[in-house]
Image 1 (tube, one colour):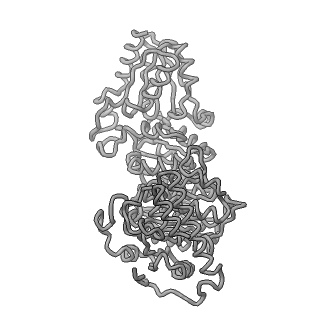
Image 2 (tube, chains in turn green, orange):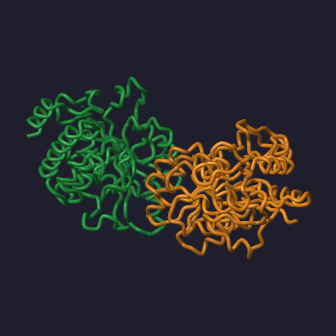
Image 3 (cartoon, helix red, strand yellow):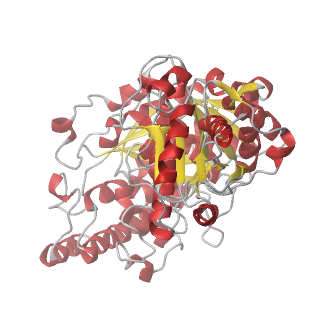
Length: 289
Length: 311
């Protein structure tokens, strides 16, 4: 897939890799996360691997290069917020929280297990480092708008990042929040759209055509940027571009592949919400060596 | 008799709460109607208006609350219900202290007609874990209980009424009210009338009329629907032995439902429920509609007489 560069010209002065961990390290972390994602879903024999694998490169880049969070003080009021609105992609969140020291390897084995730290959908009441209880699509951007407005009221420089799914954009509440974020000129609210083009039942194109997603955000007055959500350089640069937008909300439409990294899951609607069997797990782990 | 609307008590409380710097008012238009405009006029920098978008309002409030603020979000009762799932999943489930006020509750709302007359709000919010549900009866009690919410670390729903009704409490009496404690307004051993909202003043009038025919009624203002004051109900089951509930709400699931559940499980006693009998409203004057739907003073009196016969 060819990335389609955005409406706003991005700055490349502070190139990726100068200030942060090397791109190679980010890619290595993403691979570890992918292995954990597939293993978690296999162990639970349930869950959502496709949208976790499409989102994980963005999460790795965000947590490793930008997000101001600390596993030794997960409730620091002045931490940045990350709001995973597509809460079914919880394995992606748990895998990066493991890399960031919030969750142990053992915690990951509790995914979808009764009493476990890792609930089926991300839940702020169960998991350290999770800022929002998701599971019902369309709500996260509103919540992120609330945390962003609170930061402004506090005079704090903390930033709220929200990840939305593309199918999720079919929820009307997303656009209520999109309109309000521009109205309130919220410059500390940054959004990623994981544009993997697949939702629960089928390809988005067949369920509800959304045409040019970036145009829709632009139409609401957002600063918009597009990137290839699996090109780690491009993702890091997109995050840097977000930093430059301070007079209103910014969105990166990240073009991704559902199930990215596991050949038989890639671009396959069947793996939106299905676990690999034992044989498929072996194949997946070989591919993610 | 002084008349005032409970929604004005809400607006007055918000202004009094302004001394707490964490209090934030959140609106989805309709601030003129819910009276959150009283706060907005004085503290525009602490008022967040979100347009006609109730779903967004609920989750923005949740985001504010998890960042340490105390959001008071209001719209019409009926439009809070449009965002019910947002309240359920985004506020009640993670137990985030957002304080929601739904004004214009009940058929007493009047001429706007059935689309604006929520008759189910108390029932649906009562069904949510963690929620505190209030329906105060007058200006002063609404003001007092709203002020108490600012230090209540649970999500809440408060229903206020559009139209003016008798002021039952003076400020001193209102200051003694407590969330979760039913208020005894009259005491009598023949029947307990448990009422909320605009029906409390009707219940008091009914009790006065009953006393002239030799029937002594206890009247309780059950301003807190959840957590229900079960202790008080149990003690009244012993003292009075029979109950009438009176609410401007469906007889299903609201105050009448809550009292029935408590009685059935703890201290069975005859009960008659005055409320909207499983139908929608229509346009009309508030009191005219109460009469038409068998929810007037005469109907409370008749229900009391019936239920005493069932003891």
